[in-house]
Length: 272
Image 1 (cartoon, rainbow, N blue to C red):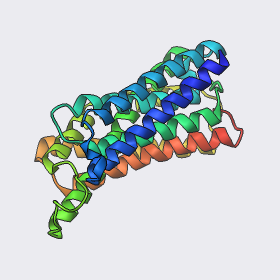
Image 2: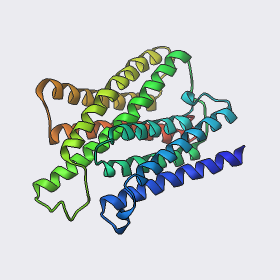
Image 3: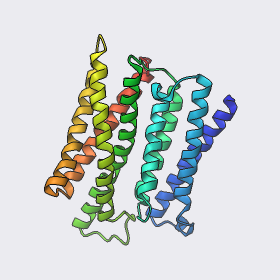
């Protein structure tokens, strides 16, 4: 069984990396762009399917619920990002975003493999389950929103500098990126709100809170407030352009830092 799991892990990582390479080739207008345009997203979907199979088998072998393991949590975040991209990319030219999603999925897969399955402290299990699920789903969606914001800023900067878009990387249209960010915020911010609220309830049942947990909580709340402000200002004031893109990117970076702190804690041997 372990050999099968290892083989699926390698196949998933290879699919993600191949998808990323083809996405990059397409946006760089390299000679490989004569390949059919559906190949990069298909490889991404194959990698996600293998990744899901790997997580299920890993959890069965270790007899550990995926929600209570950082190893599986990283995989769930990346899978949510892949699903979000697959849904939003239909009918849109989002190859640059697809390359990022594929690279992030491969990074999370390899990082999780190095951590291994380590149970987290559970406390009130149903409350913790809701807290973790909301954060995983919201985090995966909002990381993709942050990437779309980064590409929006890059493309907008090229336009302001009047660079030839025909000779540079083939980036998604600004309108498509703006619409993607807006839709992802509508899904991600409510989920993160549930995660923040339930996280507060979980902390109330904990006797001691470490300094690292406080830092992660502050980062999470700051990121949530920033993303919530972007969503509300867009709805109420029609806020668009560079400033909301910078704000959305900042919120996504905050979420990524929270994930990085969890990973660092696990790698340093302080639990998952």
